[in-house]
Length: 106
Image (tube, rainbow, N blue to C red; front, side, top):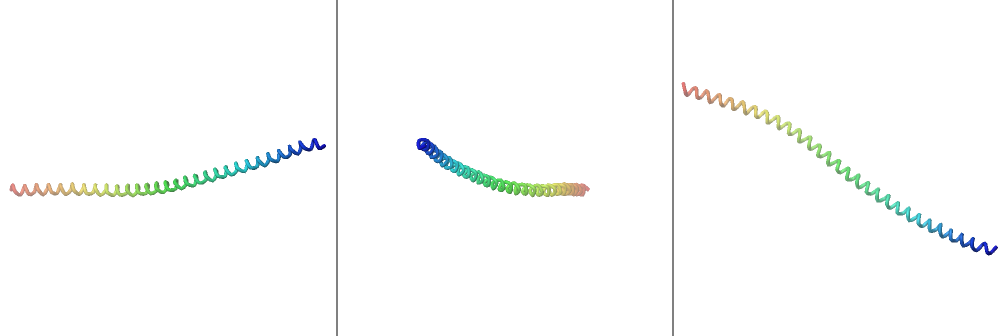
């Protein structure tokens, strides 16, 4: 029986070392995966932060664009009104000049 026990004990010892080695390898792989997961999560958070910044900048740009469009519309209306008023004043000025010329002729 002793002859059969020695190879069985050696096989058991080798299997124990193999299981310890597998456990160490598995632990290293798990630690590596945890690092990668944490790294990806931090990259994701950074990307989400940049996205929020870009969205807020876009919102400011759109608000500024709306304000500028409103100002442009107001200035266009004012310009049209002033051009109409200028045309009226020029017509009145021409009419006054014609009346003055007619008075000079008489």
